[in-house]
Image (cartoon, rainbow, N blue to C red; front, side):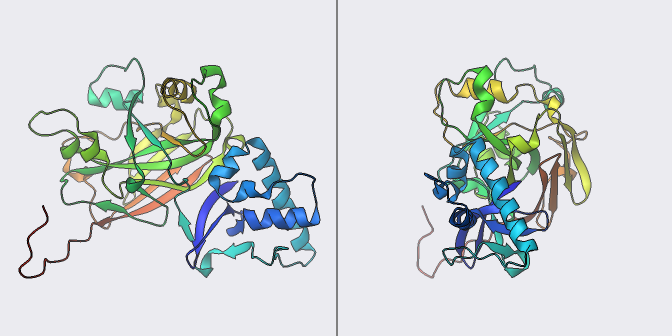
Length: 335
């Protein structure tokens, strides 16, 4: 089950991609399903967006299975799916569907640093005693049909593959043994950062905002797979390629702090909401991957391919940020 946000002619839809690469608008499909199979007290609004879906928990996943079975049965009978409301519920990729990042508006994004044994080893650091976390904001997120953007302020951009966890249930002070009840599913994250800005040459403190907070530097997608579909997330194989060359390979068993530990740690002071995202951190890379190897720098035109077992593949191009337009004659430069 691949849950997506998508647009067609600038109209927003929440739904899923089928095995035959069709897009189902789950909001319209649910209303059509209940029109034929009325259920007392049914609430079709759970499919208005990803956040509402997650709030419905396992019940949303089960209802989605029933809806897809319903559509398949009717199509075999020669029916062309058209919602009872008159709204359309099936779309094809070639019609101009555009995939968006499968995250909700106002999402909180937490990213773990130094959270794999291989990455800590290549950095020459000790194993951390507790999760080490920084935050990102919506400005840095791009979807699966958008490029990662290179800013000329940074001279050493590179990229890391990470497993990202989507929260599905509101909570604070979440016990370790109950943490997985708060998880809705998984997606792929590509974390682009500028090593020269993150670690200033003058030996100053680590600068997470300049290193990891620029516009268009974190790709998420291409969809969310519910945890019920993924099953046990340890191990899941992971591989990152740039221009067809492998840069990272390994699996989620390499992570030091696992999902329950991370969520319990952060929720001691943070209330998590459905749709919040936790990116679990980078694995180690090939020798010289992180520092000092000029061949590791991303450049405009690079194609990034990220794969995580049981979740899928995310293909993202890299482009340079558009230059500022020339200032009009007689105007002062921006302060």
